Image (cartoon, rainbow, N blue to C red; front, side, top):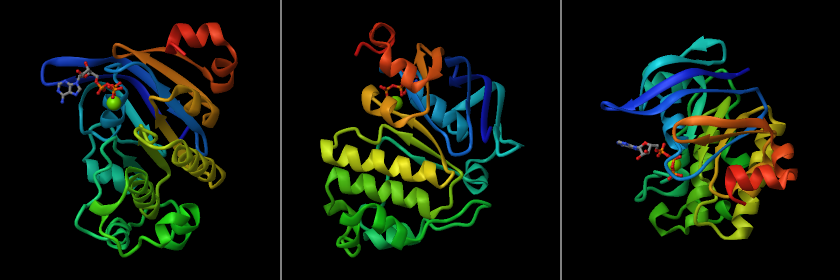
Length: 232
Ligand SMILES: Nc1ncnc2c1ncn2[C@@H]1O[C@H](COP(=O)(O)OP(=O)(O)OP(=O)(O)O)[C@@H](O)[C@H]1O
Ligand SMILES: [Mg+2]
């Protein structure tokens, strides 16, 4: 397993938000993390990055204990984050946003050329300042920025949020490409059917706990269980 999260308890100040969460992601595996608003999905990603305080439990990545390691150390180990608000630099061009995100890890860095092959729309926008991009184009920049940083694992927080169906399709296709390159993906989604069709395995959270885990296809095909767990 490239990522092992063991029984973590995480807090915002005195308030506990994760009550013993465990999950695993294998190299080249796409794992969906689903659940209602406030379930703790974003907090789980933030805990992996040591942006939310983990008081108990252990997080291992690529054979190393990264629990409470500095966030930049975790990034250098090969974990990339595409946050729900994207956080690209609005006044910089697409090209510049990608060039400042380049770094070396033990994993393979994607070239700008490969990112433009993945998202052909970006190539024509390379000189454009990011504040002038559409939501879908910004998401493409945010994912490309993760890839030029040589990730072994990409944490995607609601990549399809606010995007047109065609762009959602492009984003899911990217996830397929990452998988074929051996990059692991932990995918948080509000759109459970799209996430389940892209994922190998799924964890469902509720109120700071994992309430279900198993094969993504199993949940996709079991409509009674899907309705109970996800309401769809
Ligand atoms: N900065 C914060 N300070 C205090 N509590 C927070 C903070 N961020 C989130 N929480 C609380 O932590 C719990 C989990 O929130 P989290 O954002 O992880 O859920 P989520 O599953 O990502 O939800 P959503 O689908 O709405 O994004 C919620 O009860 C939320 O109110
Ligand atoms: Mg969230």
